[in-house]
Length: 571
Image: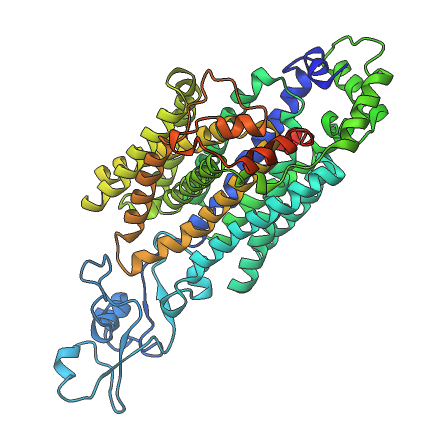
């Protein structure tokens, strides 16, 4: 009996499948908390040079309640930008000359002619506005002025952890199994995220955030594969969409927590301590049946199948795997030739489709995380803007699940990316406030929907022998987009609208490029490398060199779909 015949006997979505799927949905919430908590850890706030820290207004009773404001009005320069939302310069001050005596009644204009005041940096450090955020990593580690790029760099390195973890844990999941890999990933995730709360400097903070990301993606990959390999095919698309909705729930929890927990270390603990919950269900999960069979562990696979069936209250036949089934699996494992990345670029049409999809994954990840991390720039309450940013993902996921079947993959992806790109560009010409927030959320809706559709679309475009490899290279491209998003946001210091220009224009280009891809709805999916090359091929590529066709034909006899079960490891 083959695995495709066994899963329906267990129940396509029985009690066990519901258990592991529920656990994964909780992991999705926790993943959101870990990934996006830096929005509040490193929130921007007003800061200014600490001037005359040893002087007080004790001799002037009328100034004792606003002594700091008096000193600021005398010694701080105007803001660096004309359109700044702050009253004073954040990084420069006048240096009091020798012989100057502080007097709150004497302003800078009164003494400029008598003393030689000079501009300088914040020689005595900074003071921070604590009316909204009591502490942040910015205020605690003084990540301002010359060090202002550190928060964005730290978040980029977090996504580097995603990239490294995707490669390491994707391979490890195939070597030692999904369950063991999930346990290792959870160890890194919990230790990294919890230790982050006790960081003594930005270097320690960045290092442990990297470790948290490394473990987070490791847990996600291994358990996502484990779940998809045990639920019926008819439930997989619905499961994927529901997972996205639970990620949006993480927005709600994080925004609400940040409203009441205004110190970044305490908020970090609120976001990281629940990760330890993941250790509770792991012992009750069974190893992937597909992985056990692929490794020749037939007896262990059969024991696992019967345990799941008992939990689901299903009756199984006395014999699950015959000698012929075992021999067939052994022969397939021994004769399989692993698919290669080169197969994706060997022929013109396959190469064009692969590059097109990679660019779309980069853009979707870039804009998704860029918009998620910049909600504080919309000119409305930070917490509610973040809350709404998560809320729009729920209807986006529901729309995506319905629309892909009604209107197809290509038109949905292309049009939504075009609308999202235009929305980003339109916000450039809007002043901060409700309307800018509304248009920005429209862009977030579109990108959230396309981010879920592009995975399904890519899965259907790549032919079976290289489907796992294709999704793997697309996943790497998505990690690059995540790494670049905080860096592009930093370009707002050079030109305020530059990030939106880059986000919007890249989305418009991505949307146009999608129309060059074939529609997959209702189509027979390519099963071989030759079919993959011919699928959606334009007339300009019809004359393929004979040596390319020969290479494809040679590969067809050797490449198997051995790693089809690991297709979702790319996420």
